[in-house]
Every structure is written in C-alpha cells, then in structure tokens.
Image 1: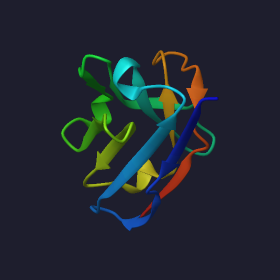
Image 2 (image 1 turned 180 degrees about the vertical axis):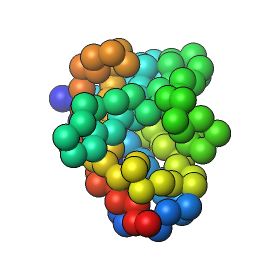
Image 3 (image 1 turned 135 degrees about the vertical axis):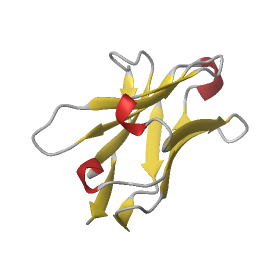
Length: 116
C-alpha cells in the first residue's frame, strides 16, 4: 500500500517561510519522480516543483529562486522549502508520486495560508 503524508503547512505572514514534508511508504522516493503541487480555490492544481530519480529538479517560473525541493533517502521523505511567500500562494499543497503530468499517487494535502 502506497501512502504519502504531507505535513508542515500553516499560517505565515507574507515574506515568511515554511518547510513542507512528504513522508512516503510503499515506494522508494529515490527511484521515483516526485512533485509538489498546489491548488488554490477556484483554480486548477499546478506543479510547483519536481525532482527526478536522478536528482534533477524542475520549478514553476513563479517560484524559482524562492522554493527548493529536496529529499532525504534515508527517511524516504521529500521536502519543499518555501521562502518569501506571497498571499497569492495560499493554497492546499499536495505531494505526488510519479509522472509530473499525472502522478499515480497523491497525499491528502496540507493547507498553506499566507496573510498580507
């Protein structure tokens, strides 16, 4: 059984930082493509950052230079460090395992709220 469990969301002021975690069981993160996505109210879910099995990373233009995706193979966990957060980045953030276009597995999501 594959499970992805996100944590680390919360309320932060604009300009602040949060670090999200995605703990995975049932699959090995280092051999899978992983991604962080977000979905704001009334909007489609979008890829924010991704990491390949080889360690290459990919970011949405809007977060380049502020967000960093990483993984800890020993903990089988993927992280998203988010700095200089903006109010418009308020959304539910999801972790996905598999293709960035259509992950095979999703976590339950964690709410990130950025106040102005």
